[in-house]
Length: 193
Image (cartoon, rainbow, N blue to C red):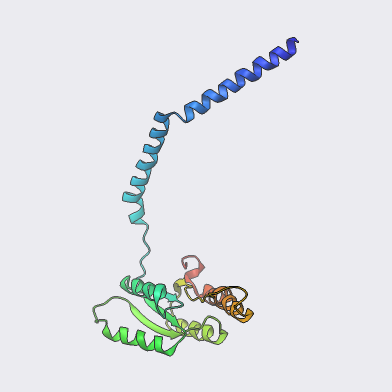
């Protein structure tokens, strides 16, 4: 019985120590101090460290797929504003004509250079031609944005299997195909993103 009472006292005191430690952990003052410390660290990072982490794209090559509109087109405009040489990959000739018209609208003072290219990510020959066009510039690729993609809308039972195959070909295999083609041409394979 002496052993039982000793075990009970020992486990009770151990439990009370744990409870005391947990109550201190969740003490409002402690939490507020920790939160204040985190906010101070964030403010320091945002003001002094983050502004120094900037990679200039001026004069560097950026390849963007799926530039027929939407996010891809917005990426192209943003990279142009940063002064990059942007290869804008599109699937349709009409999109190339639109980018050529946009190029003519830009003034000579605008930074960056726009190079619209035919790039259907589902076709190996298009990817190979895009790689050749980039290689002719003689500079490595600083960034690759795999934006091209298609979707399948509707009920599963109504959509043909071919539509799902198109999605897989463009969204998955297209991304892999383009990445494998341009990765060896990235800036020493360390800087390219």
